Structure formats: C-alpha cells, structure tokens
Length: 318
Image (cartoon, rainbow, N blue to C red; front, side, top):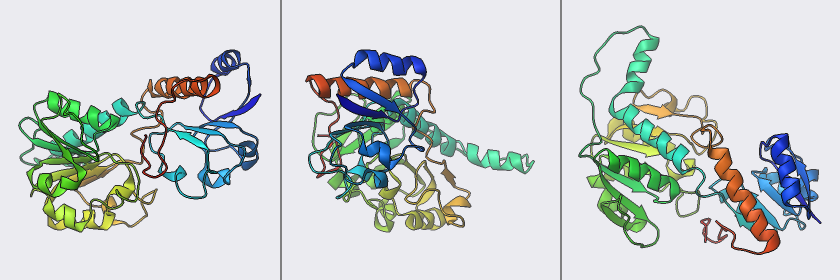
C-alpha cells in the first residue's frame, strides 16, 4: 500500500472520493504551509507544493506531483533523490494567469493605475493620451499554456502577435509570426508590448537585463507573469526611469516579497501584484489542478501516460 500525502485544500467529500477511487493507497492530508518533514519522510507519493527544504532528498518518495506549473525549485541538485518522478500541472493556470497579464496590459495602456493613484489623493485630473492593443505588436516570450492564452486574448482584440519559443514548432492560428528565444534581439525593437511567461531556469535567469531593455521600442510596455528571476529588477527600474519603457507590470519578483525600499514600489509607471495571478484565486483553477493531479496518480499507480513529466536537465516538461 502506497502512502500518499495530499497538500491540496480538499473538502471531506473529495477526500473520501479519493479513498474510494484509490483503495490501494493510504491517504493523509495537510496544507502547503503546515506540512512537516516527518510527513514527507513517510510519503511514497506527494501531491501539492511542498517546501523544498523539507524534502531532504527523501529516499522513499517515488513521485512528486506538483500543484504548480513551474518546477524550478525542485530540479535543483539535492532536492529530490535520483529516480524520483516529478510532474507539474501545466495546463491548469493558462486562463487565470493569461487573463491577469491581459488585464495588467490594459491597466497600463489606459493609465488606470494612475487614475487609481489620483483617486486615493482625491485628484480629479486628466492623464492625457492612452494606448490600445488594436493594431499594436505584442511579443509573447514563452508560448506555453499561459503565453498561448495571453496571445489568444491579444489577437482577439486586433493585435499583431509574435511568439517566441525555445524550440521550433508549427505556428498556431492565434500567432502571426513564430520565432525562437535566441532571436529576441530581432523582435524586441518591433514590440509595443512584451509579455514574458518563462519558467525559472539557468537560461532564463535575467534574460531581461539592461541590454535587453535597451533593445525595446521607445514607449513600450513590459509585462512579466512567469518567474521573477526572468528580469533584473534594478535594470527594469532604470529602464522605467530613463527609457525606453513607458510602463511595466509584474506579478512576481526575484525576491518575494519585493524588498521594502526597492524603487519598483514607488515608480508611478510600475504595477506590482504579489504573486496572486495563479493559485486558487480564480474559481475553477483548483478543479483543473485536481483533474491533472489525480489522473496522473492513477497513471502512476495503474499504468498509463503521465502528463507533464519534468526534464531535470531543462526544468521544462518533456
């Protein structure tokens, strides 16, 4: 009998349904913030997002099914024992994070963040001209589940969409041009909006630095809803103060919370949200996570194709 530790916020009805669906397992339940190292040591299978420091390269753990799309914290040497299977829930967060990035784009284009600031100060003022996505060029860096959702939304309102990926593939119908991440320098000067949705890997670390920001179109907007390590926060602040960027928004930062006193807190043309675009904030996301997690549990126990297996050498799904 396999010991399965589940860290998802399930009600009693769903817990009982799991016990009935998988009688060959012994289930225990806890939360992502409250579980202990002792619980992990007893688990053959773990479902959720455990604290990496508590895993201790458990020799017993056979399968870690994450409740996140990103797996960067778990592919680092020494976190998981060799041979431990790791899978993500890529496909669960596309709508939630894609819509968040899309909303943030419009907020900046229409200067809604500035009017909200004015409202708090009881200022009735005109902030001048605004932008639009209709006829704009949008560059999506990372055309996975989330990036694709964002690209579809931009295309639907009349934007010209360019997508870049690590590996070549067929161009989807919601993208006008598809290139490779290695060709960023070619595309950055064209884009009115650049949206990055990248995992945290050695190759994506500070992909957007002072040099890349300098290559962007004057007056353009930068959006980040992947990992906070994808951009250099100090370089972004400089690009917002002195150009070429008109505005930027991010849901994640390299150090979280964003340290007190960092210039990104106070810049008028910067919007920061506290890593809340994903999670369970959008009703329905948890259902998608459960569907993937428990289908993969069944595939692992009874034979079948496991979705979203992570390649430890790249940090991406295989």
